Image 1 (cartoon, rainbow, N blue to C red):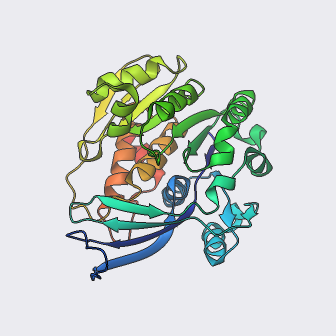
Image 2 (cartoon, rainbow, N blue to C red):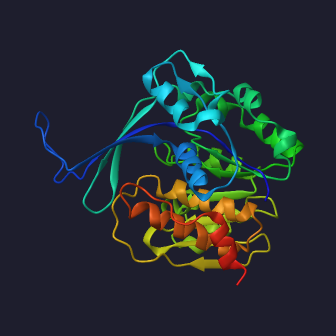
Length: 311
């Protein structure tokens, strides 16, 4: 099993809903569900890794309030070296809708202060050598994002393959955000974007063509993954071979963090040396379980997926 690490956004999610129709200003509605939980791409990914039973490291920061203390407590020993910033912790309020979609209201909080020097204080490049590092929250972690070139240099020096999931830009996919992301992908060995992000990045309406366009901008040994929600996922292998996996039909309860949970399953399987198609199946299965259970479940441990892939 190759080493795994997550670098990026851990914050608090307050989930409320479902809400329909959207309330008018000055009114109040009652919803059926509320849940306070660990959030952010890196946070969601790490929770799924815990459930899958894989070892990993995580580099993140928190604010200096009760939410920050709560996040550190949730990760126990893994959060021992997380820096505490002199600001409130980033909070996302997610309003779910009956069709499974959601709307987020997010505070800036601690995430913009997360820095490359803080990452170096938490991660041992020699120990992570030959492994995978998920880099996430690119449009929220301002200080770290400015130092991405240094981060990529560090990863190259230690032979750590970076998997990128930027998340949705706050300003949308402007030309500036699109060009920045493409420049980052030139230094990454795995792209983990959803279908809308992939097509917006490339200007290609077909997901497979968009994936090929992204791969052309990345190193020759790169893997491109397109997360397609209810349609499953597709991937292009380093040699350009395409794989596609359908998603099972499930009753959707909560799609928040579905892409992050997919990342966890996919990267864990990749680190275990499973074939690319089996990695896709693992990611889709873990995400499908997560979005259809309340309280959230992630299904089988990784060892069960490994056994299935070897039959």
